Structure formats: C-alpha cells, structure tokens
Picture 1 (cartoon, each protein chain N blue to C red):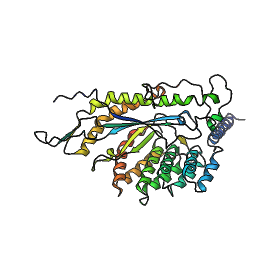
Picture 2 (picture 1 turned 60 degrees about the vertical axis):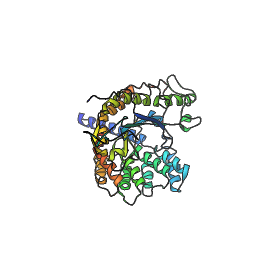
Picture 3 (picture 1 turned 90 degrees about the horizontal axis):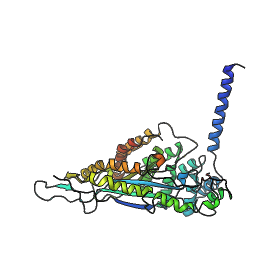
Length: 192
Length: 204
C-alpha cells in the first residue's frame, strides 16, 4: 500500500497566553519574565478517524487528519514589566553600560512577547515549535491504524508521533540549551 | 600551627562561607510577611491570588504557608490553579508532603486531586508541566486525558527545606498508588504518567 503524502498537512497547534497562572510578582531570574510550555500529544481529531465498513479491511480505524494536538502555553510577566512595579523600582534610575535602568523595563515587554511566540514569529519558541511539529509529525503518523479499537489507535498515534514531538521540543529551546531560538539582545536586569 | 590544622581551619572557613551564601539566598523578601498575614486572615479573590503568587518568592515561609492551603483547598477554580502552580514552582519537601496528601486523599474532589498531581510533577522535575483534557470518546486510555510539556525556561525556586534525594521516586510511588484509585480519570492519568515520567528523570 502506498503511503498518502501528508507533508502538507499540519498539526492542530494553538497558542494561548496563560493569564491565570501568572509568573512571580518578584522575579528572581530571567525565566520569571516569560516562559513557553510546548505541549503536544496524540488525540482523535474530530470527524477524522473513520472506520472501514466493508471489504478486507472491515473494522479498521484510520486517520484522515494528523492525530496530534499541540499547545504553546505562554506566560508573560505583565505585572513585573510595568511602570512602578516592584521589579521596575528595583532597577536603578541610571545604569552603567550593559545594565538595565528603570526606563528599560517596559520596552522589554514586546520583546518577551515576540521571543516566547505570542506573535508566532518564525524564530520564537512557539513559532519554531509549530514549524518543527509540522515538519516532523504528519508523515510519521500517516500509517497509523487499528482494528476495532480506538484506544489502541490513539496509543499507536502517540508512539508514532513521540520522536517528532521530542525533536520539535528540542529545536524550540533557546540556543544556549541546544535549540535554535536566539536570545533577546538586551541589557541585564537586576533580580530579587 | 601544623599543616593539618591549617587545612582544617581553611576548610571550616570555606564551609562557613558556603553556609552564609545559602542562608543569604534563602532569605524571605519584605513582601512575604504581608502575604502570609493575608492568607491567615482568610483572604479571598484577588487578594488570595496575589498572596499565593507572592509566596512563590518566599523560600523560608512560602512552603509552609502554601502547604497549609492544601489541608483546606480553595473552592474557587482559579485560586486552586494558582495554588497548584505555586506548589509546583517552589520546590521544597513540605510542599512535596502536602501535595502527596492532597492527591491521595479520596475525600478531596477530583479537581483538587488532579491539581495536586500537577504540583507533584513540579516537585518531580522543574520543567515538567501537564494540562488535562476531555477525551473525544469514552473508553480511551490516559494518553487522551493529559498533555505534557517541558517548559523552555524552567523557573523553579528551591525552598528552605530541600527535596529529599528520593523525591522523584516518591512522586512515582504516589502515582503508582493512584494507578489503582477508585476514580477512573485519576487512575488512567496516573497510570499514563508512571509510564512517561522516567523519560524526564534527568538533572533536577
């Protein structure tokens, strides 16, 4: 049997800013200013896992869409990166070269949004994650089938997708952590 | 003075410097006492949320104050999520104990127990995050109920009482216990996590 060409299909990926689990009000490290959490897992795409009703393959479930859903959950520390926040007031009014001053706090916000991927910029965490998932996962899951067993179908999809998902997670890390996302060129903040 | 004694004194000085460094790093900020007081006065709504978030930055008093919340978890879903996130971020043996009790306590409602499991995942590994989802069909396994992620910039904070070396095994043992829980959803999710977590057992 010839595999279908799924290279143009895409993973059901969405980007969401988490406004409930906010980052700490008193940042102690750069990661307290913005984060990206790359979730991805097999699922049953709605109306896209038909079962063959007759013939030699009767009872076989298969997919007509990529059986992986993904979520880039982003958190931005909007409280800290605002005028007169405790973090703002922690920075000196004037700073030596390379160090941040108070007036550098608010302009950092759009740079964090872009770096984490709220705008899905191609070099952001979410942007790289989406592109890599779409490159690695669709064709790898095209062949997945099961006979009369939806639980087995999703388990098999999970196994088939796992290497591509892991590769996408690794690629979407920061360059310093072995990924491809470049750092934000900026002055250095003082932390609590 | 003998060479041996001088070496001993130098070592003792180094240890003293190292201890002072840890003690400095473990100090609470000025925002910690008001946050604690706020919880003691049974704050609700935004005041409660703010207090919980503030306590993440309190390595000494934060774990105790957050752990106490698990004995009477908030009814409000948002407050519960914030408590779960704070308890996953501040890594300390008191929070490991509190989240373990909350997850195993069958008189807690499912939402509380699932949030406690998220807190346990943070104690297991600082990058590990989970979101729950509703499966499209009945009868599916744990993979259909939960999605996992490794956070790109881990923002964990060590508490004043470090996790025991057995912390990862302790979390796995709790999940193994929950794999035979009476609640079908908790059972399936825990069973799935037991199979997946060993791949996250890298540096903590």
